[in-house]
Amino acid sequence: MSHLLTRGEIVRDHRPGDATLTGVTHALGRVLVVDDDEVIRRLIAVNLQLEGFDVETAIDGQDCLERVGDIDPDVITLDVMMPRLDGWETAVQLRRSPETAHIKVVLITARAQEDDKTRGGRVGADAYLTKPFDPNEMIRVVRELADAPQLAPPNQP
Image (cartoon, rainbow, N blue to C red):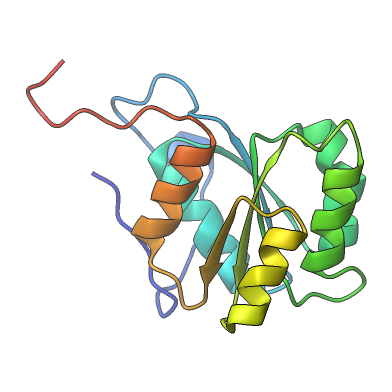
């Protein structure tokens, strides 16, 4: 059973040898988490890692675009308000490029106005979550977009 972190909890770095995830035999997919806020970036990353996703992070849109080809993610979680290159323009550039147009994009942002949600659709986002977000909802959305299998309830095949 995974523990979902909340914003107030401390996220500690750990080495892979320190953790044991029983029942996880392979990653559910690769996710690139893009947020300039280190706490939020780590919160999203840890929750997805605990669910079995392979997670990489980027500090802003420019970092995302520079690294996306090497990472080859199935899904990108993308903050909107970031320095250098914001999430709106990052999403537009991801959609313009034939190499990245197929990647699913989840905008995760504090911008909750209807105009912002509409803009999210116009820039090509596949999903739009507002901060503060429910970690369970974020995981559900990423699983769905990554076409990751849902975990079977105990005692079922």
